Length: 327
Image 1 (cartoon, rainbow, N blue to C red):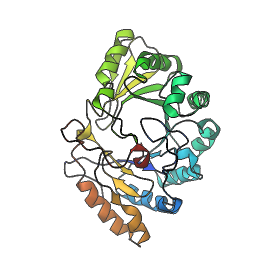
Image 2 (tube, one colour):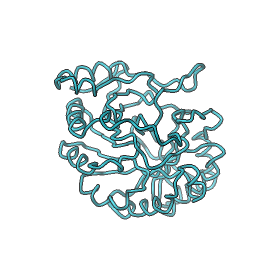
Image 3 (cartoon, rainbow, N blue to C red):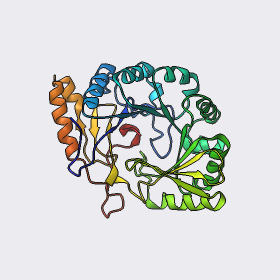
């Protein structure tokens, strides 16, 4: 059985958040308030996550990305990756803030991890500290270096651009890609921050980013799969590194969306901006069979939204913020 929605989109990608806990408090994601975690018994157990993974794979899911919170703060993530790999996941990846990556890189590779996304929202240590509310800049930079020297290279390095905070670093990030060979990805700021400060005026459009980089170092577009979120570019002068532009606000890619999300507390979300989520944890704990889960998941995915409504009058952000949904 293959998952499709009523618009004919095939769903092949699953983001699994394994924790809502994080050792960073990035301003575009979570509140500075540390007392806003789910209780441990509200989070899916590893056996529950294993079972749901098997069900999703039976429905044609081919790509799984492990997210959080920060996935590496939960004990057992390497063993979980190994079990997913053994189940035959074709493309197994993870998004991390990089704080714990260097010391875990070898174990993650041994577990079957194929790709890594590392968040880096400033190349300036002081600004990094203000954005993340941590003093982890050197640790993250070391993790990027370790990843680049491993089979995970080229690492994808993600920067969420926020006007007035780090939009002055567009060219510096591109230079970083040229110097290190990473895939530097610029992500438009979305209305998913816990402090609800988002406005359109804080969004740095991908078109502006492209123009600024292209003026300095001419770019050539790289072909991409229809369902990929990033528009990809290489440097025309042959320099190493790659640029990715992710523009969910100014250039929505909803029409080709192939992904769904499972939150750490077991809610199925068909869009980052869904107004509702759907409780798989309750079904698991009430004794649902695999057939029950397949039928329920299929019915929910069939009603997946055609797109988000960020740019429409009356848009209401989802009640859950990014840290509770999973990146």
